[in-house]
Length: 305
Image 1: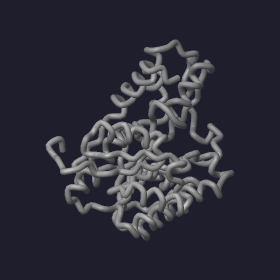
Image 2: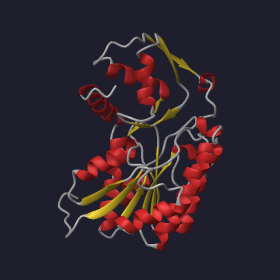
Image 3: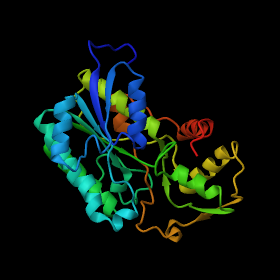
């Protein structure tokens, strides 16, 4: 890929550009002369407004749109169903319809929460979806509408996203560890942590191949390498952060996920099988443990806490 060149940078419009993956994608794109990145938050493009979408597309005329804008608060969605569906279903329909009319391909982020988690071995793209809550159902319906309105799409389902900022498990764990002597973590919920910067790398690689003629539209899975549990992931977070600061937490308690009193049940297994992405685009998984080391280094080096 490093040897590829083109007469002019391709324009990639990123929605939700202040979010975890959006901001990492913009940062990566700005460092790559292959791209002209157009970073928009909801004020620059509100996907719940057809008028806002049309204005942005007419003004910037992008070659690709990457949608990272979403309602991502899984528990809150149970009490905020209207807002959740407005973003995750209706917003995607608006974006897909407008991009479809202009033949602008869309790369759209989706989630492991489409699955009920009963397959411990993990889920492929062909497995039947069965969301457990409002958030997962809103994302399911958004996917279906995207497929309907814009065939030229990539749906990238990801899981357990962590980064230096935003509403994510890593940062919430660090907040608890600074004030609590004991932390509970589910030892019967498994998945594959995935750094936002790693997802950005995958998106960049996909777009470059699409731009060079790959006709590989459809749904794909990506997550960090190595299956773990929430308990083991928490253990790794505390061990890594402990090298930088003295945390208050002394005990990590393994508990069944049902005892954590979440508003909605999470999938027992959030493992995503990534064979299709590898065979189609040649993109390999990166170990989440090395990504965690990099993210923690960034947090403490740049005092993001």
